[in-house]
Image (cartoon, rainbow, N blue to C red; front, side, top):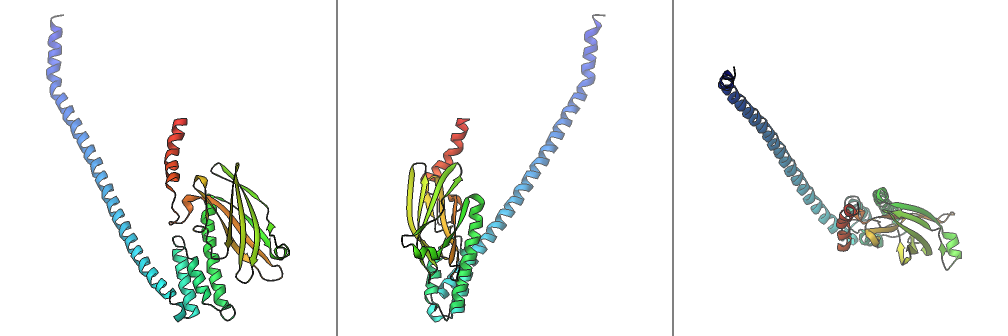
Length: 287
């Protein structure tokens, strides 16, 4: 019996040898088909991504070229304001403001057109300029508020006239990305005719105090006209309303936001970029 056992295994080996080759071939075929399918899908996805990237790039290039031509023509028209009608000059500013307000400081152009308007005979056009500026300011505020903090204050212009030294508004404590700052606003004086306020702002962070003085009007837009703070943060004050009737009040908003939400021309400083790049690494090391 013991002598027959090797013969049995030998016979089984002979019988199963073709089957093993068949299984090997079948396995190779399945793996090859599956691998080819995956490769084809990857190539298809890569081709679609390439087409999408090319279409997006072409669309952006076309839009950039169109905006460039549009900007050049409008600027040329604006700078000839003395030869243009008030209506056309204000229309040019409207086109510029609604299309380029995030990348350009339009305050000089607003002021330029306003200087060519008569406050009395062209009052409707001055009001149109201010309306455009208010619309742009509100659009930018919505973007900045989404990532930051804000507070509103009302300035009693009658009380301001009775206090030559200015009036102090209620301070506010705002926190952004773990940094708390106290903002204290003082209104120094008001330019009733030109709808502007002269302000002094104190920003207190821990034991550090920063004091700045500036004038704010309807043509100061927060994405561009803002104050740089430490930790790549910014703050800006905007004028929302300036009333000349019996109430004689002005509404202002201070917005506190990260530097990443500023306009394209307000680029982040290199030390802030380095700090941002090192932050994820430091957090991982700490953990």
